[in-house]
View 1 (cartoon, one colour):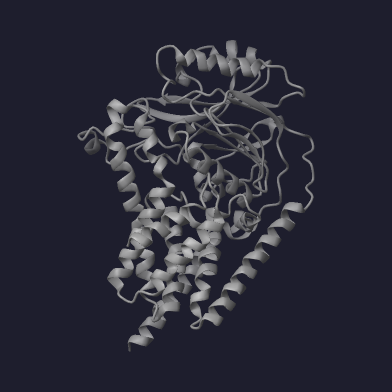
View 2: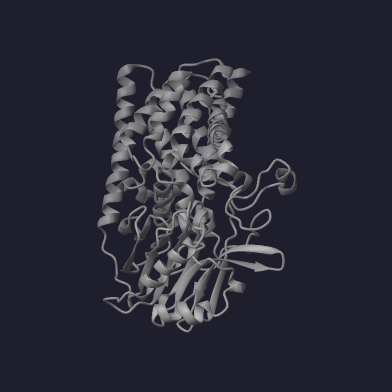
Length: 491
């Protein structure tokens, strides 16, 4: 069991910020070997669960950071959060190991585990509003293999990874296993080469160009609402917006909840301060707003005169961060939504949409956590020219969280064939092209801004049109075939 946990932690080495895919693959292979060599179903499930616990503990150790923002109120929950998150998410790997038990032999168990891991990655993408963080396929982010996501998406990346690792176990002798390992390496090498080719393909420049300024005020979450610090951070945003630009700007972007007022109580702030500072350039900013007793985490766009011309309300909210399931019951135990300023949390907006910003093009807005969900981008009613993410990664701390969030934004760009620009309070603010390459950044915990042309968009990808449906069908048929083989053997 200890070995399984260690191998699971080794698989986590492939996630950001380490990106050691060359450690993750052998570690997954060793865990698969344990699964393939075990014939008892109960022990198989325990091996999967302990391997998953090691994996998720190593991937999600940063989850304690939000509980340390207000230590007096939430600090006591930090260790419980990590433990419960790790052992709870590991249940998906236990399920994958249970699927492996359907296999009639060692090779079939390895294949079942490979299919099970991909199936449970798909399951946790959607189940209970979803949490597709640290999918196995994410180990390829930043490598040419990531380009395959334009066709097969993140679940497809997981599937090719787990199948490549499991393939050698389908042979019985050492020579056969070495041969299949070589074929797996060749297959991955072919996908890698295809990714290199895609990266080298020329792109048509955007005409006319769209010039955007992304502002990062370095508003530390510990200080954001303390005393007069909100004035300090607001002044940073206004000063950065007023800074001279080498080329005319079409849009200035501030991060999530950048404005310290409710929209309805901001008075003439946008007309008298924002419009003056921006020199008549439209500004998109994160802000909270209220309708009756409902609060929303929103992105608003003000034109060059300070008039609000677009509003987007975040609709994929963070459980326990922005709303509390069974809120009244949770309140009896002192559990409230972290990020929300009032009541039990925010109200979800109506859904994905695009905003037509004139010269700045048609934008698909995302607020923070929404960039984690590939299906959210595909659910927009029409195709955007580019994706805009405003985020407050100050909640994620200074360790792995912000970098894993950035990595997933890169994958969203590849899946959709659209450039993605993100503005963060503490970082990482970035310009990402439609192939997932990070072109410019403001590093973590740094005050600054980026002036950049929006990279060109590509044609709609296969994944943008089909989503996870092909992977779902393939996995369903494969699992049914595995179950049928087990049933025939048991007769």
